[in-house]
Figure 1 (cartoon, rainbow, N blue to C red):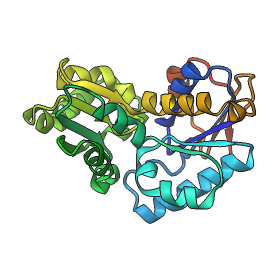
Figure 2: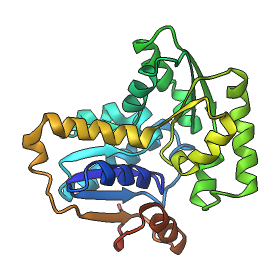
Figure 3: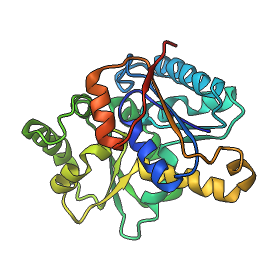
Figure 4: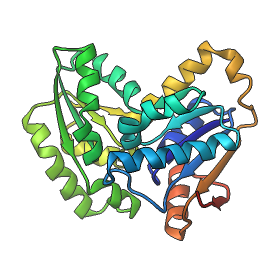
Length: 261
């Protein structure tokens, strides 16, 4: 099984992409809804939570681990790889590879949580591959709670998105990385505010393609993941609101099982 975790609703955009790219493989999802968001937590706390999330999924049969959270990817990936002997995919590198492959991409913008932007991980990875690229980051701390609240088309959300993107528009970016898996749920709004000439990189889709390519190159592992196309969903807190949003994102969602780590 493919195990995916995130702090909340955002990781379901990764599940959605994996379902599209790998419809026959079984998926386990854990949303740490009781402790969301991770983006406002210290690196040490995020690492602790990420290890607990990973242990939960692996104990329940996950043979591949997908970190569907940019904050956890930026600060906890190395620790996870030290601790667990399974393939681990983080959400940052695939998006970076897509961004640097853009032929017209000379100026790249990154939006994410404060923890992700402050880590500088996107900038480091981009410049390692394309030293000629200009990289600009913008922390957008209000977007995750707005998505979690389901305010996907509210006027207030549009105004906040516009305000966050304004400095990047002034930099005349060519490419914009959605550095949080919550943000694809606002992609149309973000595209409208940043301008149609800017190429948007959806980190959820980039991550899914990376997993698909890995399994194509490792058919022995793909054959062991299960081919029933099942999805099981676990959360650390169950609310009617979360269930409603989950069904909106995935269309069909089975029972959300409540667990305590």
